[in-house]
Length: 242
Ligand code: NJP
Picture 1 (cartoon, rainbow, N blue to C red):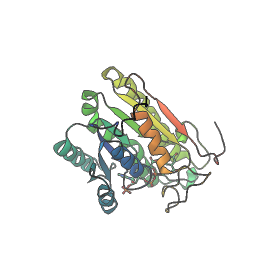
Picture 2: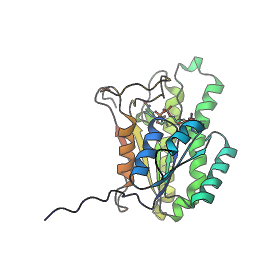
Picture 3: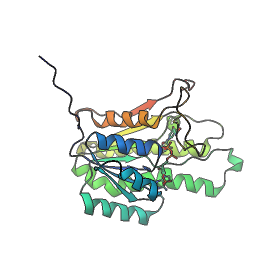
Picture 4: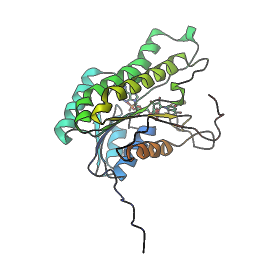
C-alpha cells in the first residue's frame, strides 16, 4: 500500500497579506505562501518590484503600501477588502534598521524606525483585526532574534524589536478567545538588502530569505489546535548567544 501523498496546496482557500514583500524575507514569504495555495496580497513601496513579483504566480497580487503612512494603510486595507474580502493571514514583516551609538542617533532616525517597525505593525494589525477575529486567523510578526536581547549600537533597532515582541504577545492575549494565533518569527542574520544595501550571498554566516519563509509557512500550516508562539532561527555561522 502506498502512503497518501501530501496535499500540494495546504493553504488553499486562505487569503494572506504580506507587508514588506518587494524584496528579502517578505518576497520569499509571499512566493512560498502562493505556491502552497494561498492567495497573497503583497504590499510595499517599491511598485516595480512588486509588479515583477505579482507576475510570477496567478495567486500573487500586489498593492502599494507604506506602513508608516496611515492614509496609505487605509487605502491598502480598503483595496484588499474590495478585491478579495476578509483575510485569514497577516504577515507583518515590513521593517527597517538603523544602528549606531545613542549620541549619534537623531530624533529623525528614532521616529523613522519606530514609525515603520512599531507604529506600522500596530496600524496594519488594527486595519485587519476584525477579519482575523472573524476568520480565526493567524498573525505572523517578523521581529528579530534581538527582540529579547540587545547590543551596543543597537539601542534604536532593538528597542523597536522589543516593542514588536510585546505587541505580538499582547495581541495574542487579546485575541486567543476568538481562535486567532499569533507567531513571532525571530531570525538571526539573513542575507537580504536589510543591513548593507545589497543582497549578500547566503552562507553559513547568514540564513536565506527562503529559510525564514519556510519557518513562517510551517507555523501557518500547524493544526488549529496548536499555536507556535515564537520561532527563533539562526545560521550555524552566527555565534550562539542568549
Ligand atoms: O529586509 P529588506 P529583510 N512600508 O530590506 C519594506 C527583519 N529582520 O527582508 O517599501 C512598507 O530586504 C521594503 O519594501 P519597500 C527586519 O527587521 C531582518 O531582511 O519597497 N514596506 C522591503 O520589502 C524586517 O522586519 C534580519 O522599500 C516597507 C522590506 O520592508 C524583516 O526582517 C534579521 C517600509 C525590507 O526588506 C524583513 O527584513 C532580523 C514601509 N514604510 C530581522 N519600509 C536580516 N535581514 O538580517 C520598508 O533579525 N519596507
